[in-house]
Image 1 (cartoon, rainbow, N blue to C red):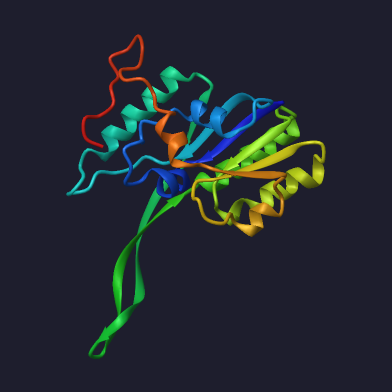
Image 2 (image 1 turned 180 degrees about the horizontal axis):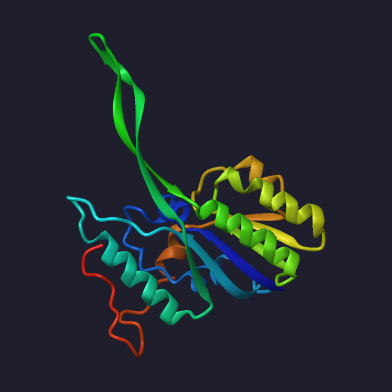
Length: 208
């Protein structure tokens, strides 16, 4: 079964990878383990955004760049698509007002574009007929309409849902999925990229 995997990178990171030592992740190996053998993974499409360094963690952009270079060098069937971060000032209510002060102006940073990019690719690839089964790796209910359109207009195609968390998947997504899977810790542990990447000098960052 021709299969393409669509990965919401930040949903995967915050749902399964943050605060673990398994960030040097081989996406193809992971989904080969999570999915059944009949799935022939033609491509993994990874949707993310460039991160920025912080005072406490200035090397975040370098680590991300190293990982993405390693992943694409080792797995040529992985394609990376970038959204962007948008920061702006907003006024928000305080949980505990301070005297007469009931609101405060804060900087809100949002990752923009990745969910839209994923949805567009999912629908467009369905129209092009390049997959028999699409795997959505996310628990973001904003993707439900794209899944619905694929099922409505291409009833012969299957959609699988892989949720990064071990909790209940989004009911909005499940309404349009033929099956669902979870990403478990042991699958992450045994799906790591080699270090270094063969034929290169690309190595896993010492601190991550």
